[in-house]
Image (cartoon, rainbow, N blue to C red; front, side):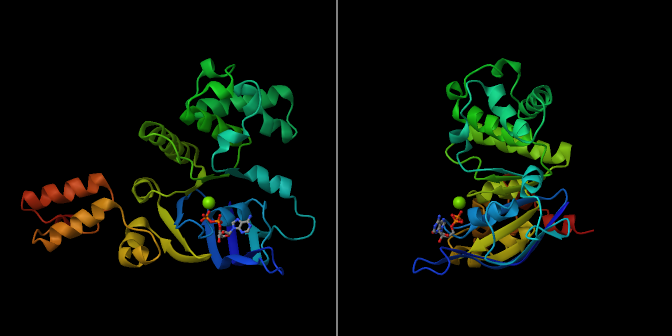
Length: 291
Ligand code: ADP
Ligand code: MG
């Protein structure tokens, strides 16, 4: 699996006085098995970008290739593309509408042309993957907690067996427990099923812990594309575009400025803890870490 964006442009209401450029010259490649974080200020183009990846929106310039083939070539099956590239919208619980959870999760696979029985098997598998046991199957989606609703909605996309799972701010509005459960489950799907994941997030803390590659959007442009540690080392530039590094990175820098010889490239709480303990114990983490 690979998705290539080749100088992609998108303008809303192109050719009208209301024209808005939402994507400008975006080129990147998404490879099999990656866990990618997509961050950027509100209005930077994240949602617009991900809706291009499954063909829901059509670029006004440039090209998108799925497995090396242009999705804009005549006769290309967008329906098939959509079954490979699963997209979980922001607040997906608003799209739950069936009377029980199992029927709701069956909707996608049935729409793909699977039989009732096959769809049900897929739905059960997907629900278990997001940690929802049998006891939820017959419950009304409207009686679930916020986190459970969202997991049911994610199961609805997983039931279509996508190769890529894209989630637009899946933890928005959830309490810390619901948030950790969802992220933990997504990380497990990536680890155990080898699913390629693209996670749109507002939380620098979350992406620092979970993803192995970070894309940073700013005013429709791709500003950074790299490992989280590398991207967060540009925290001053991130601040200029309304973002920041994880809080622990700032703590490490403050300690260093106060005269403590602490590593400043830490991005997670666990790393910060280790770095601070090393400093307190008088060992230099960086020397230790360098072979
Ligand atoms: P993000 O998801 O990063 O917040 P969006 O992709 O939603 O950003 O928006 C990118 C830009 O496109 C913003 O300037 C936004 O105002 C504009 N935009 C988004 N949706 C529409 C729309 N339906 N019509 C016109 N402009 C839009
Ligand atoms: Mg958005």
